Structure formats: C-alpha cells, structure tokens
Image (cartoon, rainbow, N blue to C red; front, side):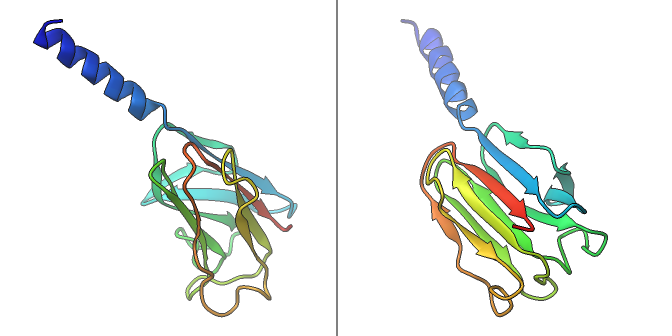
Length: 147
C-alpha cells in the first residue's frame, strides 16, 4: 500500500471512530407546564425534543423553563451535563442564582443504566450534590421533571 493510500485509510478510520460516538439527551416533562431547555454556551440545542449529537457534548445545561428561569437556568434547578466516551459526568446546580423548586431526576441509559440522582425542593436546598459519573461509551441521559 502506498503512503498516500495508508494516509487516506488512517484518515477514514479516524473519521469513522469520531463519528461513532453518539449521545442522546431525552426529556420527560410530567409537570404539565414549562419547556425543557438544553443550552450550551449561547446556543439553545433543544426545547423538549430529544437531542442527538454525534460526538461529545461538554458544558451543556438543562432546566425546565417556566418563565421564571434566566437563559442559563438562573432561578431554577439546572443540570450540568458532560457526555463523552472518555467519561461522563452530570450534576445538579442549585447554588445561587440557581434554586430548586420542582422535583427533577436524571439517569444514564445505554450504559450505567439507572445510575443518576434526584433533586426535589427538600433534597437539594443546601450545596450541590456531587457529580454522577459514567465511564460507558455512547451513554445517553434521561431527564424527568415533576417526578
């Protein structure tokens, strides 16, 4: 095989490997009001639909927009999300200006199934719960509001 063909083959294999990573964030809004919102930086990624990404998603925030929340989830229970095949972590953020006023649950699926955390108005009032980690590749995240 020529050097050029070897380089093309290596590029194709590397590209396929990168594209093979996929994560889904699923929302279940049981509140009867509000809009599940997923942001990353200044971008709104989802307003309730499943969000599917081919590759990692780092530094994302999810919350239920009830008209009370700021763009970054201020005044609401925010969930900080990092999903990557090199290791995932998810945790509630309820330190001011974030607050807890509805019950929220998240858990991993498609790897580390059932591993997650619940935040209700009584369980998350003081300090942030530790991150919940998962080392499975292509892990997904299910988030439920008003559980």
